[in-house]
Image (cartoon, rainbow, N blue to C red; front, side):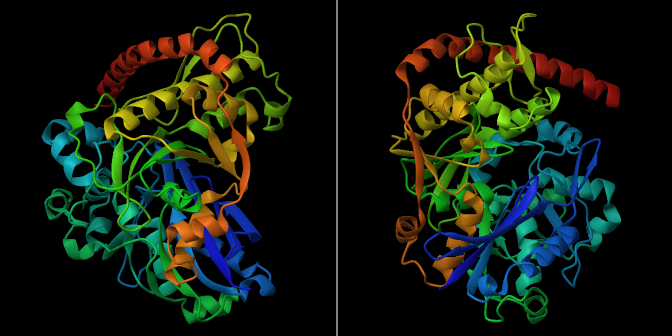
Length: 496
């Protein structure tokens, strides 16, 4: 039986799964994504990511490996890897949530035309994007910056190590803030601002394109077949969208991991001015060719829950044992522990009382995550004029029954949950399968590989009980922003 290999290089963990062509999991491996923490957040270690990946590939059973015909990779966005002539990494790779670029963003704020950038790249300027990361390299690692021969993404680096061919797929390029969406090329104007010659940028490609066969030394070390095809992948959330059939307008993906992402599939590039938006969201190229997306999310969705569990010294079993009733008094939590859609965003609890216990605060946190998500949802759907037809939720957060019930009620939407918890890995495998002809087209892949686990129907009574709290949350959100901006000004003043 033919097998496909999906790799997901994630914020916290990297996962590797071998699937059948029907989407059934054969074997899986996982390891912590190599990372060095520091005062700004930290940097990934590309060479160590590759080394750990190869060791884990080697550990798969021979029976599973020998049937693999193709592989592809999903990964986080915004992270850049500078390579030398021999395709070895030579730069730091600050994480997408790293804050060392904050002051560069602030210094350039008045010089950047946000509307122009948004229309060209699909992104409203924020310090996390690759544009600012490369400016940081230019300023603080000038010698290394000049010696870089090629710039690529994390998955682009690993794919090059596996195949010998450099690439940068459209979906990850869409998160750099120097990719011209209309013309599908690097923006010379924006590269000039950064000081990166066009010839130093990796070749742009769609997702799901065969780069070549796996290099012989990699095949011999890992035990993977010599004729295995290496295929371009994509942004992790968009690979997850591929896995659950979200690639036509009206289809929506909720991806719940460290971040809680919202992806709405689009049939065409939207015509929107940044200044007309109540709240920013990005748009760009889907992992399915000739398809696009609108995207937003809560940077610290699942992260907020992990953070709180550590504070109260509990694990995920606590969610299953926790009473399910909605607290009479909700403490509103603003989940900006890793930032938000404006610079300087930080988290906050509002309406705390001394009689509240950890159950009340845990449930309040989950309810507030759903409120934040509802606000993002409404603005995107209204701006893009989307009539929602199908909603699918993937990721570890789907195992939290309380969260899923609240989310369905607050959004007032039926939510499908697939059996697979690792949508990004599976989406990468599907891209590989489409590239080598196992599936006729994306819908064919969806029909053959999607397996439903559960459906959450919205509870109207629960929705009505939460509506007054949601309205209050939206009112207070602007107040929290003003407070955060005030704190940011004080922090920037101290650093000067």
